[in-house]
Length: 298
Image (tube, rainbow, N blue to C red):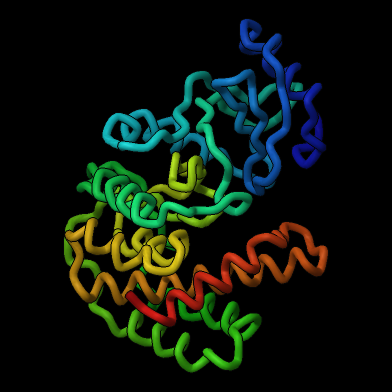
């Protein structure tokens, strides 16, 4: 059995397919840039192989296998759905999954020009996603907590990259989120990790949502932060108007989480500029513009 940290190559992916799904093994294979916990390889025109890379546990992919077919039926945008399972073997000791391919350009390599359309599309998607989750839905004790439980993480990001001239405003937004009442409704389905690399765009608007390994049942504020993180200036107000089913406490929590997510993008961008592992140079400008939108509010 090979080292689980060994390089994942086209030959390895094709060999896995030949072993377990030979009818797919002759399709063209090409690497998809990005990914950290999992690596993506496009398979033909309509499929992709999602293979564990840095993730040491199979739980995220097993969660996607279990729940994405359920969620896909209720969502108005394309999401990746599993079509074949890949199991650990002598060739590779981790699981992998063949999934549907979602067409579009990741937002961190694209842009939104049709702001109102994108805001309406994001609102419709999240309204459809944010329905009461079943009792056996997964929970997340990290991303799913109230802002109060993220204080150390926020402080780390804030100290590392918060621009000095708006630092007080960012801190005020965060403090309002921490002071806001917790979610009082039933746990709803939450994507949990909506940032520019996890949505795709086409024709100037949102065209799909990917990477559901963090999906959980909980507070929708974690997704509503995307109104600031993903949409250009003016988009957040339109988004919340169309989404509609939200109280001010949830808006405050969402805005604070958007501040934290924006700082995270900036930190990843800084790491990319410094050539550090996992750094994403394109994320820095995206995070900085998102933080400016957060400070301005709706």
